Image (cartoon, rainbow, N blue to C red; front, side):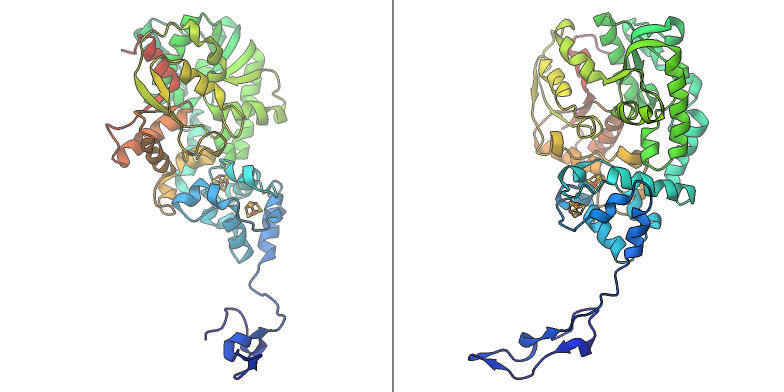
Length: 432
Ligand code: SF4
Ligand code: SF4
């Protein structure tokens, strides 16, 4: 018999021949161990995380493993808070480990953890230190630099931030108003980066502009004055950049009067609701566009039945992080000819698309650590429902899922559409 690892032989007591009450328990059957010191634990590395402001709760983990089956990264790799704790406990320095960058801050583990081990605090706290020490994956560093230089992670010209509005004018004859001209409006629409620049994000922005126009909403956008809300950069550890941009946007908001801020992007929603108030930005109620539109669907004249089976992906930062599960579903149910089919993992237990917490920009890095992208995993789940359309309402998702539809060989079976694109299609006023 081999011995257990890390147990010295002279701590083992084992009799060669023992018969007890007629039962032969010779050899390893009667093996006993003395008390021993477990010397391969490294509590100092747990303490290093727990001593970092925000990292405290890692030390609360008592290894119950409830987090493992709900961690999406574990479905495509070897991950989750329990595994991270155990690896740190046995010698891995989280500050320099590849584990540091794999968490998407999706919050599914916190939902089930009895000890409230909070990766949404731990990861940004440890990443902040890693960023300051220069230990950042290269692709993420590029995004930080783009954001710093251009005000958006895509590295696009800040002057062209409102260029998409020309398409709204061309396609629908809609003139998208600027806050700098109006000074005040009922709704300040914070468009964000991907809906301003990414071609598929622009499709949704053009559709939303059409819907706002039909509803006669008094709104304005910030145009070239707008800069990234930076919530994902914060979660990826660039706290300094986040604070600088937050201060800029808070000052910008103070220039204008609005009853509400409406956002396209759940990450901006999260920043404005939960993070900007910590820096003094508490002036506007912020809502997601689905929350704004859900009660006004009957005013849109949606007369064209679509005849689609639709499944919906809950964005982590709209659902679990900000509690909005119903508004997108209310919108979908109101569109004629839409049959809503839920995926197995939905609402509170929805799985992440892989874009949160900086994951949007880490697909190259992640390819060394996972068997497939989370977006691919989620697309397979959507295809299994038999849906023709995967409906989304977060600007990260449309491009991630469209790539995943191609890479999983599901082209022709499933298309990815923002909810507002479906609305406009049903209004019979398609783009171009
Ligand atoms: S659920 Fe919480 S306490 Fe249990 S193993 Fe996971 S992190 Fe640790
Ligand atoms: S926040 Fe999400 S990705 Fe990160 S460890 Fe928890 S379940 Fe996994």
